[in-house]
Amino acid sequence: MNNTAQTHNNLVKTLLIGGLTAIFAFIVGYIIYSYTMKAPTSDMTSTVVDITPQPPARASMHLDPDTLSVLPDETFTVDVNIDAKGTIINGADSVIVYDPSFIRVIDVEQAAEVPEDFMLLRELVENDRVILTFVRTNYTDIPTGQMTIARVTMRQLKPGVTSLTLEHKPGTTQGSTIIDATTSENILDSVAGATVTLSQL
Image (cartoon, rainbow, N blue to C red; front, side, top):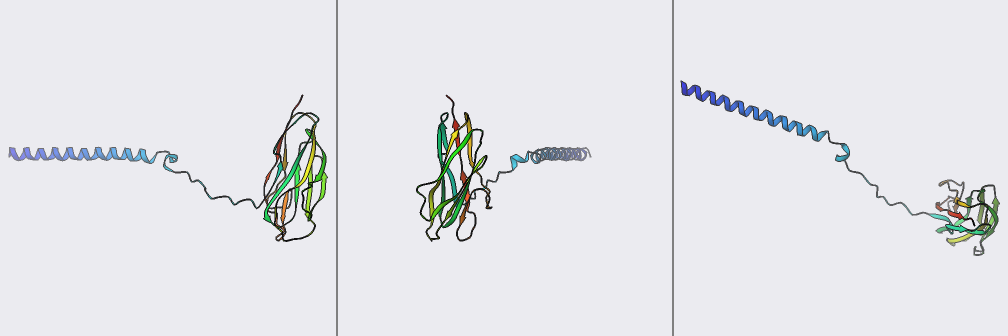
């Protein structure tokens, strides 16, 4: 009987120790699991980067040069350039916005290298902008590439740094435009202005 009782006691102890060990392992596992689930989401997620290539501009317009340094009372000239990238166009509008407290427009003229089938129809100087309208006078099927359409001469009024910008409202016929002859759509997608540094003596 004593041996049987001893064996029974040993069995109970073994089961008790095994049970406690299992409970301890469960608690430790639960703590580790809870900590993992509460980790910051930023550590568990990845950033998605859009690598879809942007379509090239159908047509562009820019001022040249794009940076100028001007001495007091000195006049300077910027060219208005377009690039229709081979599209046949009916014409273009260029709206140059400037700060009249820094500069004054002296003259606007059609560029000498404009093809014979184009002309500068409108040269309007307002308080803070120059509005140019450039049209095709004779329709041809010759694609239009790069060209200088006009030259704008200005004079410094006071020292400082100012910008010449091209007003652009994509998808509309307002502001600067380049018009496709086939669709009558404004295909101007890209514009670039100029920065003018007006120095003092």
